[in-house]
Image (cartoon, rainbow, N blue to C red; front, side, top):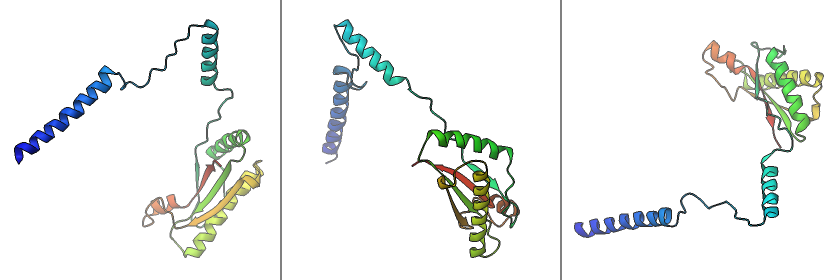
Amino acid sequence: MRPLFIGILLFLIWSLLSTWYYVCHVNDFCNGPDVSQQVSDPETQAQIDSTAVAETEPTEEITPLPENLIIHFAFDRSDFKPLEETSRFLSECKAYLEKEPGTMLNITGHTDAVGTASYNQALGMRRAESVLSFFVGQGLPAEIIETSSMGESVPVADNATPQGREKNRRTEILIKIQ
């Protein structure tokens, strides 16, 4: 029984290798299809070349998507003091939103685990709304901004340490492409 099994196994390996060799080396299919075009008419060739150039060159400048912004808060506070990175994000965000209609801004407030869940839910919402007020005051339309609160339910660090709780007291600002 063992020689039969070894014979079948060798036959399968030989079949696979010979098929691979035939497909890749004899028919040259492993490198993909040949996309070069042989055109004898110079006018048609010029038309093909101009179409290829038109397809590869962008017709308008692409605005890069700003990185998401995280704003940290003091313990049990929702007052927002903008920093330099907030102003930079705001200017990049304005430029992006002008070129990409239908894009939304999502502001989500988070808290540490100190206090009750319902209090932290409300505190997270106050944090999100304070950032919303700042952005609207700086010229962003309120109808493209959504606010929400996750309270203490989505920590990014351990709530058992002061450093972890400090990281969890935050507001995340994300751009949602529709």
